[in-house]
Image (cartoon, rainbow, N blue to C red; front, side, top):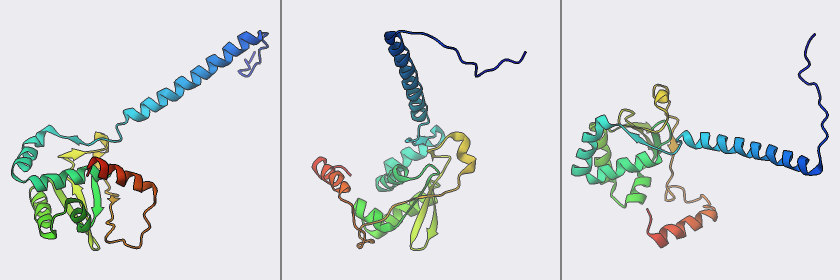
Length: 180
């Protein structure tokens, strides 16, 4: 005889027992949602890992070239999960308040010493962080790096763009707390 998996069972329960069963089902659903949320958080989507093998190079950079080090950390902070950041010099000029030549020299130093590669994109650049130095995705994804890039634009270069009011609150916070 073939068993029917959708066989229905009739149960008689009191209203109080029914409410308890409902609550148990709700708790089970909440628990499943919490598990899913924990799994999402465990994926470590908001991190940059640095490899120990290249810590001496990082120490050298921080000790001998503090601005280039700051620039590298800016790129690390803003790169996508494929180690790429697309932006113009104006973004760096606005953020750091440094001259174009100072920025150029720092980028050249980073490139010549293997910290980054620089690709041209019109009048902007795409900065590719050496994946053997730092990585933001799972280690198994390194071989699939495709450099789809995160793009930063400068307000100075985009004067016609209407900046939305919700960002005014961040601006006020940054000014009040002197954040950069």
